Length: 191
Ligand SMILES: CC(C)(COP(=O)(O)OP(=O)(O)OC[C@H]1O[C@@H](n2cnc3c(N)ncnc32)[C@H](O)[C@@H]1OP(=O)(O)O)[C@@H](O)C(=O)NCCC(=O)NCCS
Image 1 (cartoon, rainbow, N blue to C red):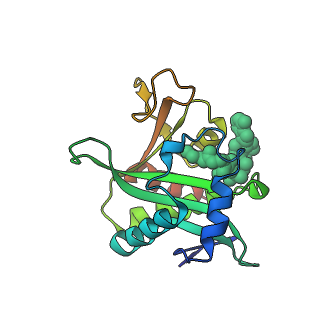
Image 2 (image 1 turned 90 degrees about the vertical axis):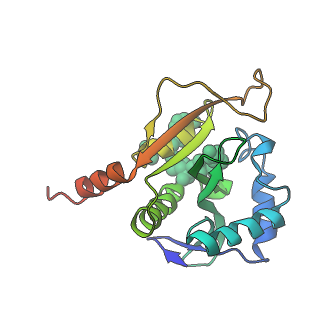
């Protein structure tokens, strides 16, 4: 379990299934998310996978709740995923989803910053990446505010979508361990 200013990032419980499912069925939350993004079918299977990942790697896509009230607000974190068919190239990929009522509060940024801290301080992972639809400007803004840089000169099409699907074109953002450290130092520079 990890704490930020406003959030608790924790392992998933069975009681979260309903809130998670409701969030992922909200059309506004899912506006730019291809259905194929759901990692393995239903909410319960995803939650199981997230907790297994936490046990194995020490981080995951966490359930996020408000520290004060314990209310479920969304999920954020990262998973190690294979990005090629041969399962040889692995990337640490961030994800963040907030229930609609909690947008505009900077909670996703707060949660992912904590995940960067966990990943870059406690593991030997060199970089963390994020993918999103070119249309998902809110998500891109979040990644920019996290100090991630857009990987230029690559055209990405979602592998599970037809190329002419409106959500097929994707952008990739990346932050290296070195960039993360420089950002931290800059944050703590005396004025
Ligand atoms: C992405 C998401 C988690 C961000 O939620 P949040 O933490 O509340 O983020 P905020 O609403 O504070 O917005 C972050 C920034 O984006 C900006 N923003 C909001 N809507 C925007 C838009 N349509 N275009 C460009 N920027 C936008 C905000 O102004 C804010 O920047 P600022 O702090 O400089 O003003 C939330 O919108 C969400 O759950 N979306 C649906 C799921 C999703 O798309 N997840 C990403 C998967 S890759």
